[in-house]
Image (cartoon, rainbow, N blue to C red; front, side):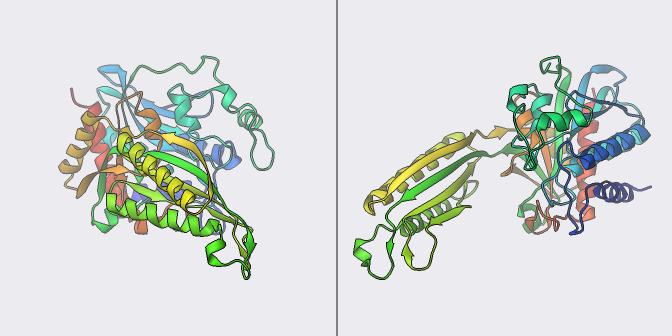
Length: 409
């Protein structure tokens, strides 16, 4: 069977688990469909001779032991959970691509010198419980029991109860960190439209952008829309409009890789005939350079204060996420780039604007990522799709990367 046929068949079969009538998928951590998906992946791993195991919280591993350096492991994979009503590629493509790449290598070259391992991580999305990267954080020893002991999902089902219902529990080893991992490579759909627009098949990721997320409250005075002259108003929406347009204009002037988004806006009282007295809004700002991210957001905060003072408004600032950029390992990135060249794929070296398991793993182990295009940049949506030829190209580059890392001296 060709790689193209294997990939198409495997992705379609896995996508039936957790599918819903809209054409999307919902496969949430510790749900029955989540466990069914892990068991499906485990079965596929066993079919090609991988030794399978789970860690305490449900990360799944499939391993072939190296013939010369068994204590050195090259790891690849991604997460098995989805968002609510998501697509069929985010996360699970990276799991199945790793499995198929290793299958191809075993059939072509036999067993590797270093151990090869697939990881199907328990959770990344944070779609059921108020926690994210549960799988990768446990893998690198960053998770703790205290983070999840008291949390529950929207139906009131407790995290710990659901974990135990599926046969998993906290580790008694206090998150013992593995010392055998020599490289981790994650393949993922881009979830953006850069590769498609530039007619490229492969993105070689060298950095995951840092993020700052804020919630702001701008307070003025609600008043009658007909009897309050323009010069006497303390209009919070007017203040927000100046802030939004001013900062977005500054972001355009800065250019890539900076991005800024005002994604949530809630005016009060939000009615047609009242001057709005308050606006709650959010700002998401991302950049691959920590210093530039800090500089731009500080300037944005100062600009907001100037607008608020000018219009006699009050401004409250809550910075609730502050994640630094995460560079990928330069040596592993070079291997991925060499693999793209060897397979004669059109590629570019680029950053990731979205977060991935790799950002958790990279501070602990040498890490790199491979992107394949997303049609129209759509993701977290039933319309999420990538041309099969591009998915195959990604698996080919991943297989070549793993060959360089695991089969060569």
